[in-house]
Image 1: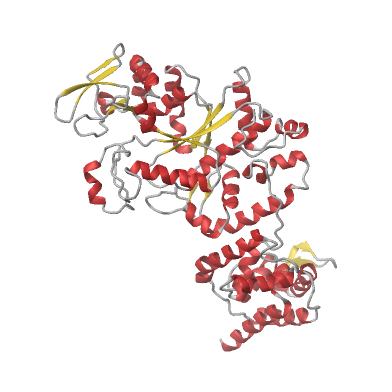
Image 2: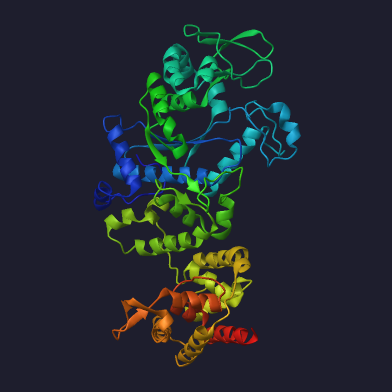
Length: 552
């Protein structure tokens, strides 16, 4: 039962067979799901879910969660030959009370009277067509997901609670109140135990979400009794949006109500996972398969915090790189903590294009290991990337290019026939490279003044380059650059061997070249860079470095 809204998969026998043993993590997770549903009615959709707290704008973690869940969904589709329908539900917890006013909203004081009210009751501080803060942020989430082309259904907690979609599970929760408390109370401190309730009534007086103890829980009538803000006792049915569940019981109850089959969440939820499972079981459901991923870290190793602003936002990443590079970063080692900062972007970009270019020539088993298969849900586009992103950055650095035309003049000379029209992916990278260089490389450029050894080395390199034909390729140029260093003791590496049996060349030589000529500590293969930039142009950089030394 193929869903026509999803990308078509190659369901040939060799792909299906390879999927059954593939070690790529989405297949490992999908195989658990296959086992879970093997005795179930195959017409019943397998439900993948992701959760979202709409107290702020969607962020890079939201992208990661939906992208990774989509990867597992695609793997499941291949394993089952697309015969079992699947759904991806993005659930917004928009009935949560607004516990604090975000820093980035206009007229924060105007929102103070709405603290602790459900987000879908709080007025929209941004104005416009969306009547509430929750509605506004939900629209931002949907726009965000649509931008990346995810196939999903959107769900609002407010709508589910108020429309009655959660009534059955809420009535079950009232009937199982003592069992729910038996799960929750051992996890709480003594003071919290005395006032804890899994039910959060919405005050009929103030409209606030109340964290109050229960005076009575009536399983037969499906009601709760509590003291409202004016001191009066109030009895409310738990149905119809009068009551919501505390977040931990809500997690397990949602799984039970919707019959969720798969949900992933960050390591910070890991300790609560047994609680979510127990709650789901108390409410009569089988907990879903879970996948716990590691959190992202800032460049200093600290946990990324939206309030601190010590990490990358999705808009920041996409200012300097294509979406696919971010998807690759999400695919790689999801159970390993990874630093998320600007310097990781160039490597992710080049790795993505390398994987995509190699895909077509790989055997089936390797195709399913290739991140590009998972990033593109099996429909990997044919991509030719003649110049890597790291090389473009060095080209911008050497040429001080401020627009695409300057870079394209070098590229077209290096690769005749390659134009912005024939290679749109490369053209996009050219724009990204200029922005990245301007914002991150240029401010930190620091040229090294050559010492005597480096002066002699640069002079010798200049003579060697002058002896080469103008159209020498990167390999020939690289050999000439290596030959210069092989004669200089400082740059010899006895652990390596040169073609004549002498010592090889250490990385210190190339580090010196980049510091002397480009004002940065590292770069791509130097011979390839010279082939792209031009021998005459590189000799001009050497002349500039030599002139700078004389001036100093």
